Image (cartoon, rainbow, N blue to C red; front, top):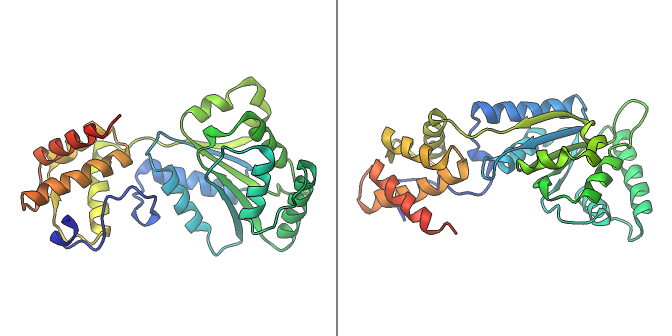
Length: 271
């Protein structure tokens, strides 16, 4: 409703992980550099953790855009609640290969053959697993085993595990110490600061086509930060409803009171 009123080309506060709208706060910029460094230096295992809604998936999309059209082949696993055989088949499928409908041993042999051929062709391969805190111990152990695939000079597969803070606790388990020892790059995303939230709001409005309207007041931005604790997904939800409240008033200014009303609406949807 408010998009045409404010002359916006698209909705500025959708919660879909569109890398176009990624706001590279200092913590997001540093996280992206850690990911790129880990891949470029072939560190093997890379771990990125962050609270729900902190922007891990959007950052992942940005990473894929950064390495697109280069020498990287990517396998992105979004649903890790699978067993070892399903994981291997999913990785091969993501790489464009038809997995053999056979046992685990044959699938590992097929994967090694595929990876060796890709390396021989000048390609490098990265496996990215989102929501990695949902991986079972058996699948984590299988991932560790395939990470052992290597030539005399390099690993055949770079692996990025992205997950919520619980992933740290899982990786700290004594039975996963062999996997933990292979993690050479680790970064934890932090929430946005109050200063970041103000710039985040302006950033998304500008990319959506705003030419100065609507405008979030300083008190509105402070209220958003206080309620959201700097979590981008919550910021988006509140901003979307605050814009609607401002539109209903036919105002170009999103006020503290618009945000307060928006928060009340968001809380009604919280179970």
